[in-house]
Image (cartoon, chains in turn green, cyan):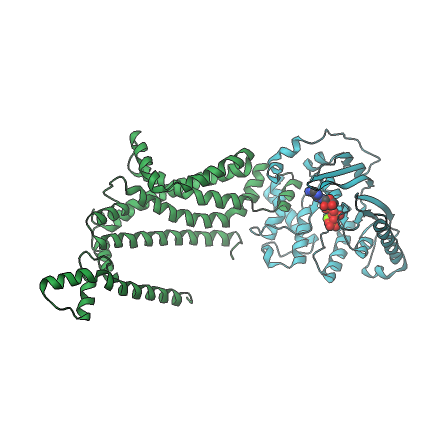
Length: 287
Length: 280
Ligand SMILES: Nc1ncnc2c1ncn2[C@@H]1O[C@H](COP(=O)(O)OP(=O)(O)OP(=O)(O)O)[C@@H](O)[C@H]1O
Ligand SMILES: [Mg+2]
């Protein structure tokens, strides 16, 4: 509860800055309109004008709020104009990519920890994979997958996976290696098999690392899914809303899609945090 | 490195087993050498170490830092491979003894798993060794009783003091009924009072269970109080300089430490340590 006041303070400050910035950003257009209509603008007229344009450079928070309200609560969720519908399209690709990325990341990490050759050869490639700009790669992935007849959800999920496996590999390699030499020696004195050492020591020891990685991976997955919607000229999904918004100068639509994406990421990360808390508490590792 | 070891690759590289029982000794080392190859050249952790430990003995190893006490214990446990000589445990090689779960090893730090309760920690080796669930439960209850931790089964390690954690780690090493207990400075990190108490408990446990115990320590009173045999070692190269058989009775109240016999042995140990220091 005590953390709510600082959070609200920060939100209030951001809102204030946002409103203030909207005035100079949208002022030229407001002056233009006034000049054409031959009206002198008082300061309060100017403020009112900059906060209520149809296609402002920077929409005011309440405009975004209204747009969000109209495209979520007031629209049937199956409607193509519902933001919830678009968010779901993006979320499904995000979750699929997140799942694939997590599995791939854990498998690579196990390989790296248990296999010397993989340890020496895989990690540089994993790092190199992340230095290629995803914006350059995404169209290629989609084109290639389309060429072999795969379209729809999967290509977007693949891009999500491409971004999300990385934090999982890095975190899990660290986590699986977190047991001390002494703990491994202990296992040795009990003549434990390699799989017993994995399931009873390495894997449980890596749990805190896994959850931290999963949070980063989830955020990366969402970015991946949105980026995956840009080059396809997709007609649905948050990425499509962003793209369509920028074609037609619908800044309010762009911002509401952005807010929706941020909210989605926040909810998913919070969900992982909740699972983390429950799991670690049951494991006696809550901090 | 450790990854390879626990992937089971170490076993493959073991020297051939020579099961030969030497005069019934539980642990028998003969001309044991262990040289570590380091970047600063070879380190002779053990050189020409020979020692027989009989069944039911309580043997302490004492000596300055770096004299190879830990290394010797680790050789008995098959955690380290000697570069020369031979060592048998229960009449077979250290590797075979480890595979037969012949010993329990207590490390300096308790090393309990934070995600397991005390009971869960103690049943960990039992799970690994394939004991049934009911058997696990019975054994956990029994060893907790033995180290006077009954009732703490469902607590997590962080809820226990350092001394209690170390007792739990001893219980863990006792659970699978190995006849040999290898202990590397198990009480090194504890304060004097707790240590006295644990020493007393350990002696009781030893006389009740008739285990063979090899015990590394830095403390002369601890070594003299606990042992039937005290092995004094000295470094560079790590070797045994004196083996003292204690004339103290098996029954030892704490105040035996003020008796003349006790002080005499302590004196001899101190002399041995000093001599080891003098000649390098
Ligand atoms: N894995 C290793 N690699 C290289 N050198 C080692 C290794 N383990 C031990 N040594 C060296 O072997 C020697 C003996 O070490 P050991 O740990 O057995 O001494 P110790 O008697 O247990 O000392 P302490 O009382 O400080 O615990 C030391 O010089 C140490 O530096
Ligand atoms: Mg040592």
